[in-house]
Length: 353
Image 1 (spheres, rainbow, N blue to C red):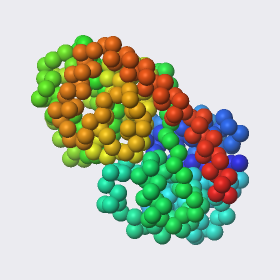
Image 2: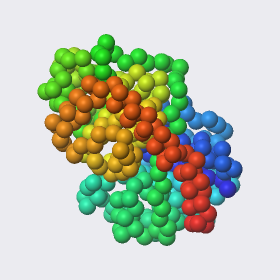
Image 3: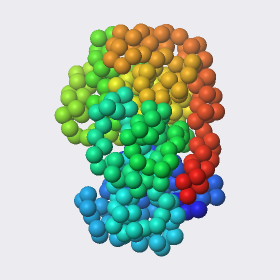
Image 4: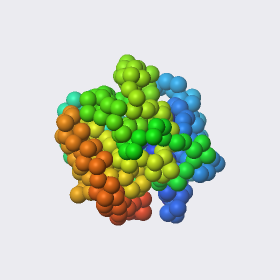
């Protein structure tokens, strides 16, 4: 079996990381795996293990027939059996099937993060395209139910996300400040991640204390990002590092992992925190409860005081931090391992054939 993962960019994000993870790990399981970035490259390019199986398409427009022909040539030259499109890249897969009549298995992977607000999802283009999907992979149960109800594909399957957390990178980073407790948040600067709420918590409850907040995530240079940067500049214990390759060496410098999103699918950041043995505070959205189990503190979205209380609980008990960190690490290794998800995905490819 020869499988091509398709993703729009290689900037760090949940869908992008999963596309690269699948590309790398399928090669270890008797599947010849390929990867195509359609629009932009990014930091995740450094995680590609075999560039002979990688294509950067440099797609410029929604209907870019030059890019489409290049992709078809790559598929034919490498005798690809399956195209596995992630997120918004489903459209170029649809174009391949519709205009070029490519007889190839077409799988779409739904990573939609606003799974708490699926009633507002725009699927006017997605639904007619889904007639050409041989299968749909969903990252949580809410998405699975929504896809089965709203789309027109033949097969559906929920498969857990997984992470491959590397020990360190060449550009080793040290978390700033000499605070005794460091809280880390890995989340691209998007409104659904609710960074403003998290910053407000630190300003109101932990200003000038021995607790600091360390933010990692892509800046989209929009009003949300600019407002965040202005708020951070006025604080003494909140630090923003931009988009960065997250490694175990970075996470191990922190004491607590946090995510206060208004909505999620199955966030890879939680899996990364867990793999690094961090106790976790997160909002009860998407499949976050499945990741946390009984080894973390969950709060309702927007619950400012509950978030502050959770930080206080962990910051004052090193024993509890160690206990929950060890527990969630073991839990995630067992339930969200690459091996289990890869085998389930290969079976789904065969089922859809």
